[in-house]
Length: 272
Image (cartoon, rainbow, N blue to C red; front, side, top):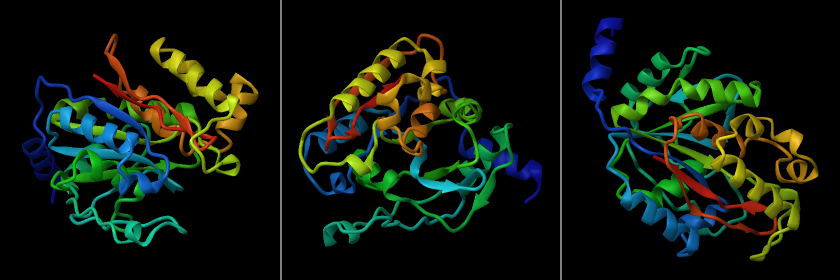
């Protein structure tokens, strides 16, 4: 397909509108939230039912790290069970949403910071489907995943994400899936929270509401609580993608606000 035909297909599938879809960051926590009826899965379902129906979904998940930026471009993405030691029912879970090669190409065309590779191998990991199975259980909305280039600094991820803003006016729901506090080495299997986890989560809440994105991008400067809360940043980076999409004075709503399992923040938010 030549460039003109590709652009025509993208514009026909995702025409520009005056309606800007919200963007969401979800603290996804344990994969078992996909099969458990709990406060988190119920909140995700309520948030999904309140959204305008998107033409497609672009998901940035903590669980797809690559050596460069990639976007899934297959028509039928597989459900990836990228975990171990959980109930068999979780491994039997399928989320058969279609893909969208047109959205993959549209995302590539819009990103100016770097060349984006069209991927035919990945699929939908549990950072995507564990949340989407609650928000959109019919699995009838096309889903594309954008990877996290592990070689990019946090500020570079934020700048790349700004190139995605136009998708919100083309009927695309952009979802970041990770956790603001995520320290697997300090997990306790109880509904409790370390003081440093609560401290960092509350600091992020304050900075998000103040739109102090520079302080959030440079979270490493926030002391010992930050070092404990974000020992590795793959779960934190999806938050930067969503914050980068916020337009001036656009509303922010938190629909989950909790630290649990000692070291996992389930904080989730909607922009717009």
